[in-house]
Image (cartoon, rainbow, N blue to C red; front, side, top):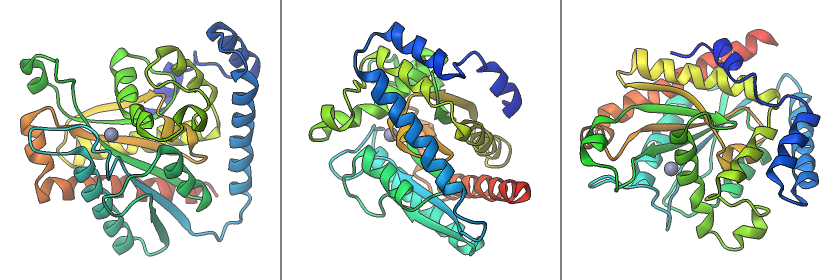
Length: 297
Ligand SMILES: [Zn+2]
C-alpha cells in the first residue's frame, strides 16, 4: 500500500513552479495553448481559494459521479455494461452516506441512465462547491489482450490527476477520456485536447495545485479500505490525465472498481453483496477524510 507521503515524494519530480511548467509546455510545442492553460490553472486556484473562504459552517458536500450513461455505455464485460455498474454503485454510495452522515450533502452528476459530458459532470461539482469529487468507473483490458492475461488481471485502482507513470495508467486515462469524442463540438469544448495523443497528456502535469495532496490522501484511504476491509485486490493509488479530474476544482479521484474483462470479477461486481462492500468501503474513506479535514480546521 502506498503511503501518501512516500507517494508524494515519488512524484516530486513533477514540475512545481510556473517556470517549470512553461518549460514542459515549450517542449510539447503546442502553440497558443500555453497562455490558455495557464489561465485555466490560475482560475482553478482562484476557485479553490473562493471555496475555502466560504466559511466554516458550510455543509460538507460530496459529488458522486457514476461514469458514462445513456448513449455512452463505457467498457463491457461478457454481460455487463460499465454504465450500469457505476450507477448502481454511485446510488448505493449516496444512500449509505445520507443514512450515516446526515451532516453531509450528497449531489450526483447523474441518478439515471442519461448521457452527460465530462465538462458538465465537473460543472455540477464546481457549481455546488463540492468538497470532494468521486468519479466511479470500471476497468477492462482491450479485447485484443490474450484471454489468459485478461483473466489474470483484476482489482481496484484509484486515480488522481497527474502525469502518468506507466503505460497502463496512460491507457486507462485514454480510454476513459475517449468519451469526449462522442460529444458535440468536442474540439472547441475541450480546447484542442486530443484524448488519443500521448503528447496531450503531459499538459496535465500543470495541475500541481493544493488539491493534489488532498486527492492523494483520499485516494489512499479508498484503496486501503478496498484492500484491507472490503476483500478486494487493491492495485494501488495511481495518477494519470483524466479530463474529468482536470475540470474539477476540489480534491477529486477516479475509482476503477474492478476489471470487467476478468470473468470472475465481472460476476462479483454484479452481486449485491460485493456492490455493498465496495460502496461501504468508499463511504468509510469519505468519512475518514472528512474527519481528517475537520480536525485540521
Ligand atoms: Zn469509465
